[in-house]
Amino acid sequence: MEGDDMKQQSIAIHGAGSRANERSGEEAAQARVSSADLYRAAWAASIGSALEYYDFALYNLASALIFGPLFFPSSDPALGLIASFGAYFIGFAIRPVGGILFGALGDRYGRKFVLMATILLMGVASTLIGVLPTYASVGIWAPVLLVGCRLLQGLGAGAEQAGAAVLMAEFAPPQRRGYFAALPFMGVLLGTVMAAAIYFALVRVEDLSQTPLWRVPFLLSAVIIAVAVWIRLRLRESPSFARLEARQQIKESPLRHLMRNSKPTVLKVIGLRMAENGGSSIYQSLAISYIATATGLKGQIGPLALLFAGASGAVVIPLAGLLSDRIGRVKTYRIFAVYQLVLAFPTWWVLSLGNGTASIVMLCVTLAGVWGMFATQGALLPELFGAQHRYAGVAVGRELSAVVAGGIAPLVGASIIAYATAHWGAGHGTVLAWIPLASYVAILSLIGVLTTFHIPETRGRSLDDLNDA
Image (cartoon, rainbow, N blue to C red; front, side, top):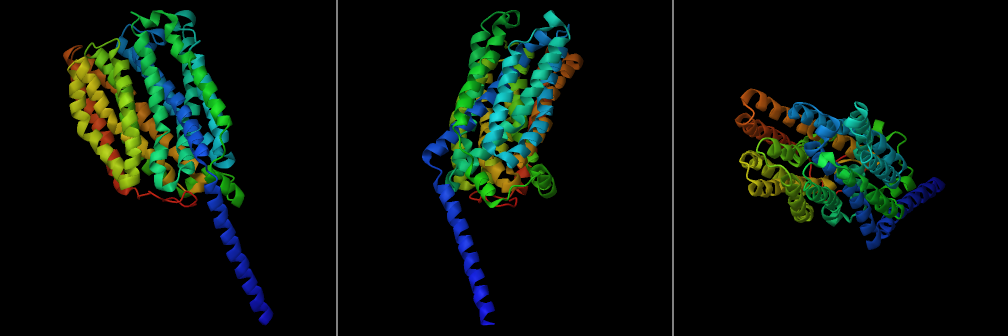
């Protein structure tokens, strides 16, 4: 009897010692995240985001301004625009496949491995667009090849931004996670501003589609790839994933584990992203086409608007991250979603007036809502998911919503403009398209607002937790 008691006591002491060792191991792992590690992770995530959104903004501007006559020639410019945005949508449609594939790999083999693969895939695809033959040279093969490159872009982008968010959230100190997790989204602004600045310079050419200069922005993707790969080669694995490996808690099928345990969480992510991703795609691509086709503001107005809007986001994004650390993720997200909802009709009315200065100012003001939601997602989305399927959860939720909100939005909007032009008149009717377009933005924003009332507050949550919030 006494021997049994001693044995149980020994087991208890051993168990307590194991738990203490586990806790001390976790603390040591966190302590080993030096300032150099933290900022290296921020740069690694930001440069990847810069490439993704450089491609994103570049393709937006090219779709709105030059891809129609180059790859989808038509006697009706509206049909060429729809075809151009149709190819744009295909890149979004494939993103969930990339999110599923690379998200599961990220939870199985680590964040660093996947982030190297995605940056190479996106960068190579973007560079290849710069050497594609046009419809005038090879006929139908031109749009086929463009769609092929767009598919490769979408596969890589399907997990790149999710990986950046997860990586930064797992490196950041809990009390400042909102701020640090928002920093990679500064890369989004960098990519957007770079693309807008380059196009702002190039559209001085009278007909850009008739010169090889349109290829230059895509070829510059190769430079960003080189910088991103160099930084990511020096990156260490995230502390959270390293602890999962040490405890042998990694799932062989993270995707199956996600679908079994996290369907409601994935749906909530989709609801949140209807406001942010839908608004982002509409204002950064469709609005540029609208002010060019409906009001005649062609040339430099579109790129200039994105240039100033991106610069304003450099202020909004870190402030939104700080705010989410102060008042919580959900409240911060709701504030910016309501902001976008309130401004939907005033923004599109101003865009319909055909005043270049007013359009630029209004787009800058309105996109602050997109930037605020975008920044808040940096910490919010990774905190919603358990550690064993976090990468897959963020990637799948983000990219399914990217199809439903971001990919369809410009295509629907372009169809609205074409319908208004055909049924209400080529002049007055096209301008009046602002009313259904504003209604569309308002609906997407409202979905985001309502979703925030079904999201638990996640600020300060342990990212070692295996369960969803």
